[in-house]
Amino acid sequence: MIHLNGVHFSYEGREVLSGIDLDIASGEFVALIGPNGAGKSTFSKLLNGLNKPTQGTVTVAGLDTKKARTSALARKVGFLFQNPDRQLCRSTVRDELLFGLELCLTDKADIQARLDKTLADFHLDPALNPLTASRGERQRVALASLMALTPQLLILDEPTTGLDWRECMHTMELVTALNRQGATVFMVSHDMEVVRDFAQRVLVLNKGRLAADGTPHEVLRRTELLSDAALLPPQIMQLSLSLGANYDDIDTCEEMTESLIRRRLEK
Ligand SMILES: Nc1ncnc2c1ncn2[C@@H]1O[C@H](COP(=O)(O)OP(=O)(O)O)[C@@H](O)[C@H]1O
Ligand SMILES: [Mg+2]
Image (cartoon, rainbow, N blue to C red):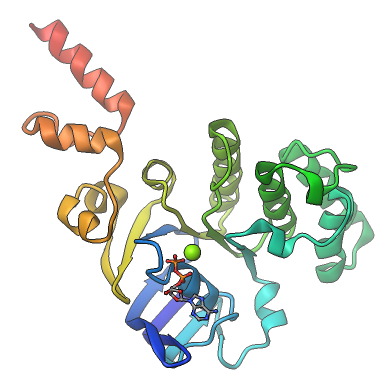
C-alpha cells in the first residue's frame, strides 16, 4: 500500500527527512511516534501527495505521488489534519459530510446511505454547526467526513488531541472498525497508551530517520531509544520494566492486575 524508497524531504534547503525506506502492506495499522518537530506531520503529508519527496520515491496505492494528480490520490487516501479546522468548511454537520460525498460519488442512494450511517456511527447531530462545536466535536466531524468515504488508506495526524477519554476511545474504535474492513491506517500520535492499545506496528522518527520499527510490545519498552526521542513508555510498561523479572513482559493494566492476583493466590 505504501512504499518509500530513499526518501529525503527538505523545506527551503533545510532537510527534515534524511533517507527513509519503508514498506507498509495493505490492512496494516501503523503508528508513527517521535519528538515534537521530528517531521511526523511532514512525513504524513508525503503519503497524500501534499509534500513531494525532494529525493527518492513515494508510492501510495500504486500511485507515484510525484506523478499522480492529488485528486486521484484523494480518492484513495483520507487525511485527518493535526488541526481539524483546516478541513471544515460548511455550516452544518450534514453539509460538511455531503460536501465530500458529493465530490467523490454520484449515486444519490449511496450518498444518502453513507450520510445516515456516518451520522449514526459518530453520534452526530446533522444540524450542529461544526465551526462553533467543541474541539473534540470538530475533530469527530472532520474524521466522520473522511470515514464516510471508506478510504483505502486513512492517515491520522494526532487524531486524539483535544478529546476526552470517552471521545478518544470512541474515535479509535471507529478507526479500528475501518481497519478491520481492510483499510490501512497510518496514525501519528504522542499518546503511547493509544499506540499500545490500537497499533500493530510502531515506527519511531528521530533526527530525520526511522530509529525503530516493530510491534508496540517491542518498541515501547526500549526506554533508551524512546528517551532519545523525548518519549516515555506507557506507565504500566515503565512499572513492569522497573519491577524486573517476572513482571517485565507486561504491557497493560489488565495483565498487571491478573499477574498480581495470581501471585497473591499462589502464596
Ligand atoms: N511549511 C513549512 N515550512 C518550513 N518549515 C516547516 C514547515 N512545516 C514544518 N516545518 C518544520 O519542519 C520540522 C518538522 O515539522 P513537523 O513535520 O510539523 O514535525 P512534527 O509533526 O513531528 O512535530 C520542524 O522544524 C518545522 O518547524
Ligand atoms: Mg505534527
